Amino acid sequence: MGELTRQAVERYVAALNRHDPGEIAACVTPGFHNEHTSEAGVSLHGRDAYRERLKVFLAEFAGLRYEIEDLIVDGSRAAVPYRMSFTYRGRPVVIRGMFRFEVADGLIAHRVDYWDGAEFTRQTSR
Image (cartoon, rainbow, N blue to C red):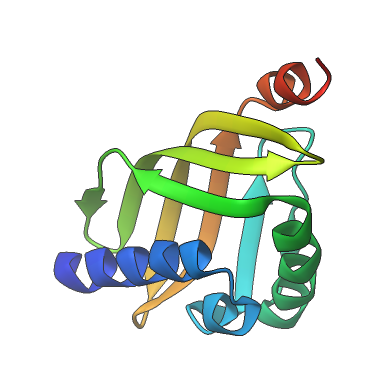
């Protein structure tokens, strides 16, 4: 099971880095729960709602790139410390954070995203 989890997470992050909402949404379950701990993030339920939100997110976060710092897998769960970089309204931004995933049948069922919204504000309001 751990290898399927690893593959699902790697496929998902690679899709994020290619910026295709349809490809990204295809990596998650129909009942996908996208949970953000940052006040600046938008949590939601469902693959279709996620696909629609991705269009806005990818447009706002131009050139989005996630660099995986580590990939820790335990059965159907995974934790991924990352370095996220993008351009927001002409300003380059780099933020470190962590994803926590739950995988079901080779798809991401639940994603919790931990990142510092204050760091985003600091970098984008200078």
